[in-house]
Length: 263
Image 1 (cartoon, rainbow, N blue to C red):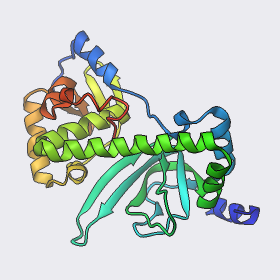
Image 2 (spheres, rainbow, N blue to C red; image 1 turned 90 degrees about the horizontal axis):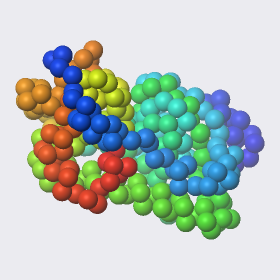
Image 3 (spheres, rainbow, N blue to C red; image 1 turned 180 degrees about the horizontal axis):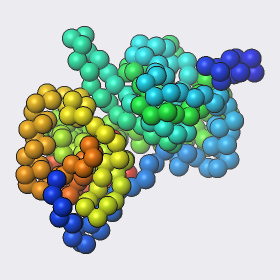
């Protein structure tokens, strides 16, 4: 990408406290985001950063639509981006909610198209990477190519673990898994449990697991009655992470470490 192209793109509840032991267990579950930079050396990521074109994206905007060609990739410096997919019947599914450090990249072959839509849900700073620039870095640096392959494999494992939880243990298991993943990605420890630091409607939770809003509402009420969850100021508080793990058989899956268990 030449300088002119880059410049052009750049302008474009109850009140009961959680006991200490339970709170410590929750803290261990809440992990930071393992973005693409953690798979590179500082020098490698600096070279990747040098080919990024800065772009600001306002909440409510879109980076691309499903079916657009994958000529550019998007590194999230700040903000949040929701990936969603639509069916021919008009049903929408939320695939993921990405944050700072994540890279949106459909890589491999030529003339690929994005299989999902990227919607900005929180004002974001984006680094736009031209496909040709990334391919050039991979050709020039074998170690970077190997590390990039490791990141792709990591993303594949995250997707595989999601499929496992969505398909094997029914809708309650899928919802429990989604809540655990949201807490790992966006959880904030409080005296009452883990607060998922984003407002999610019941319809949005339903779109994560392919269920109806009514069924999600019923399951959330059941979780609240069992003191697994609470709700404060429009946000979800997880009071018993172990109960959610039991519902989705989390402890029986040693191949899914905590850095894989994210949304």
